[in-house]
Length: 344
Image (cartoon, rainbow, N blue to C red; front, top):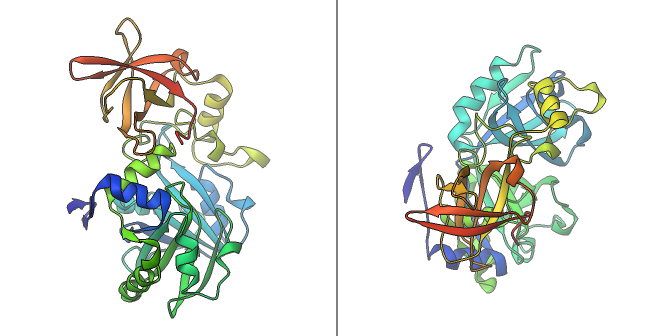
């Protein structure tokens, strides 16, 4: 257990590799109740979401969710988050635990249109049930047809006898599954019911360690490592969540449009080590002459590939897939190759 964003969080239960492969091959449960939740309601709800979000929330309908980020007005990112559409005047933002206060302040500061805001982070709990057997596990507990919940959509229904549970399929592991949002007073009942239902599939609790290795195999960004207040979504390869359609105005629109049009001097890229080694956050990336061309933002030993993998920002001329680079690990220089994401 470690302290994280004011919470006591589990790094591992049975071991990171064991937990990682449980999610890839069966089903595991993450307690991610530390995540933050903000309601945005009223006639001006969409107007505010559109102003602070890089993505275009007008394209999602009730029952759909969207991945996006808060541009910070200086070319960087306040946080990345999910926005759930419950109706024309009702949206839910799900933000990172370490940024709850920062994000809440940011959204309020930019609420000049008068949307109704409510920070419900302290009353929501969330379990992420992930893996190929997640659907079979949860279907035992609900009459909701889980097979009909497509990727980045959600329903509100009863599960394990608990009413008004938000059941979504946004995922952060690439292994499939669902997120369950409920009231704090119901989460222990829900946890116990899920574990009883998943017993036949070898269900296990999963910690932050495996959550990191799972998301990294998919090439998903982690705020504070791969994206932060100094990285733009264009540099981070998040141009797909930065939408300029319909003349939409949002924070940093002009700057980000310039980056998209003119290009950037560095790009976030995935790389695989060609020899033994584990890249770590902060390690330098170099060219064949030893010149520093970037740095590692996230790295691990991939349990599925059995190789060292990582994300890092590299100078634009080294960003092409297949480019040979080198990772400086202590007193060694390990060869690596820029690859297309995801890793698996």
